[in-house]
Amino acid sequence: MAWNEPGNGGKDRDPWGNDGKHQGPPDLDKVIRNLSGKLGGVLGGRGSGNGGGGLGSFGVIVALVIAVAVWVVSGFYTIGEAQRGVVLRFGKFYQTVEPGLSWKATFIDRVYPVDVETVRSLPASGFMLTRDENLVRVEMDVQYRVIEPRDYLFNVTNADDSLHQALDSALRYVVGHSTMDDVLTVGRERVRQETRELLQEIIDPYQLGLMILDLNFLPARPPEEVKDAFDDAIAAQEDEQRFIREAEAYAREIEPKARGQAQRLLQEAEAYKQQIALRAEGEVARFRELLPQYELQPELTRQRIYLETMEEIYSKVNKVVVDTPEGSNSLIYLPLDKLMEQQATREARVDPNVITSDYLNNNNVPSGQDSGQLRPGSDRSNIRPTSGRN
Image 1 (tube, rainbow, N blue to C red):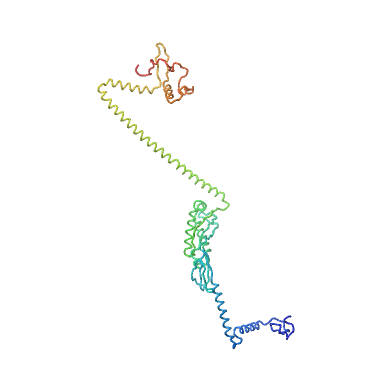
Image 2: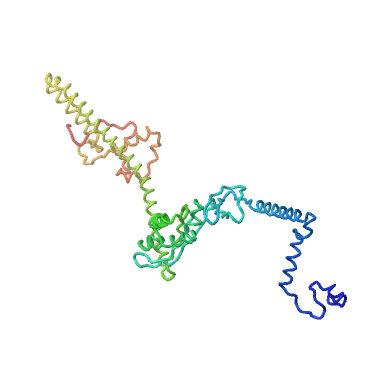
């Protein structure tokens, strides 16, 4: 049945107390007063003479106990293994909490967990002007982590943003004091090291609570209009370094051989020196032995020395003249040097009969002269040197 249906003046079914004639919204102030009156009756307004006040006090205590229990339970929190917790009490730094389960006073303390183990990365890039007024695009990446959570949170408004601005400033300063070739090729390590040192100097006074781990200098590149020319220049420098390494490797290979040859020549020279000195001493000793004999028989000793000397000289002469009968003007040549070479060949167990015409022509041996060859049983009594005593 509808609330505004007639029945006891419509008041039995209308919770707002309307009489059925007025259908507008209820008075908000009146509703609040009614609700307050009912609550007051429940907590102690009813039957004050029947112990109603004690029941109301017990209800308040139970409500307070429940509120305290909820407040205590809501204060428990956990800090991760890689985190540290920064606790503020009434907005002021109170303490730093280690990993694990902890408790805070709700509505009084506030906890900020900070990751102190993860390595963070922050890039910086842009077109920068070098000392020789060239424009290059430089990219650098800084790796860092948090070491002081309190400084990281409260010393500056945003520590990460401050580090980014400091990196950009340091990088532009170092690039501005370097040439384009240094940034693109040979001076990259120097640029990276100087940027790291300058960045550390910039952030130290601010106490950001950060530690710089490393700076990665990504490949820089020139403007697209001159990229091909710079690629050729870089390739030429790489070829230069390759040629230098090859030359150094060749030098390392040749130098030991040269030192070995030099040492061998020194040893041969020393051996030759000793040989000549010993030979000279032997000659001196021989002449000293001949001197007493010469003093006893000068003519005989002179003749013997002469014959020995001529024998040594004639042993090195490879041409002889053979006497012919009287009235004959023919001159017979006997190739004793070739015969001696053949004898040496036999001793070396090489077939001496295999002598071609090229060998004879190359060694000036006349072919087709039967008289110029020695045969078994031929008369050698008429052979004598071309010079000397007859």
